[in-house]
Image (cartoon, rainbow, N blue to C red; front, side, top):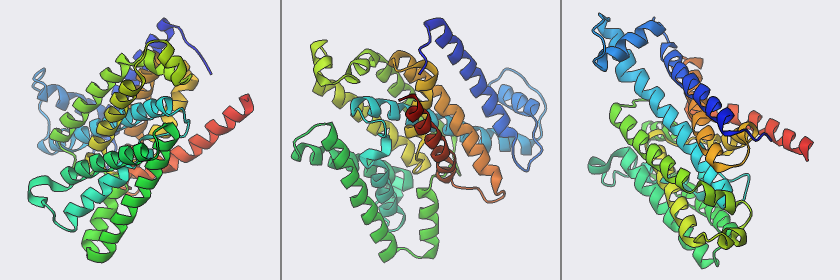
Length: 341
């Protein structure tokens, strides 16, 4: 595991941000339409009011209304889920912890199914709104189960497993009992993770939530460093254990719920990316958090681009793409940790 100095870390982050910008631009060019990187530059600068370069209407619509919002939401999902993985692994002191361990994804799935299949409040909420409410309900169930079990990090993990199974069963029951073939196909595709139909309001929502959550988590970077060594060490340093853990867990739940409500269930990002970032910059959260955010954004942009073009014109659900990439990467990381042990 490497530990970089502030200058080296800043250089790494600067290079990562540049790579992210280039990745978004290149990802937009991928697809059946003949779009060049210079076209992307012209369209973006036109809409920002910096230039007035003639561009074909079809290309402008493809880039500005379809591919750019999708790439930006993919980046936000990668950044947010990676951030949540870092926080949960530190708070729960479990290297296998990730956002979906709390059952948030399963709760969001149940909420989406309740809207899409049962039609509960569908006109007012929509699929994403139902998923958001379901995710928050699932998190509340986890907190209740953990409190009934006596609290503690291990109890939260067990409560998350129980919540995941409960809401997964409810989702399957509703689909089996009430959904027709078309509804089942649409809901199942969304549950596998989908960035189809992303619009600019989704970009604003995801970006704002992830940005605010990132700033809050960075504020608690020193506390997270202490949590790695246990509650006793953190308390001896004057950290309010229950309040800090509660704030950070609620923050991860809100970030995950927001992203799941927009993009569906996307796994392995929060599990794999924090470990990759630790190999680059070590375990100090002041460096680990921003590195994971940038690495997660780059990772998701490329996974989404590959998922979009691999079986064109039918897109592969992005959750399938993250699993296909994430599982082998995680196996390599486990092997490296074993060799270093």
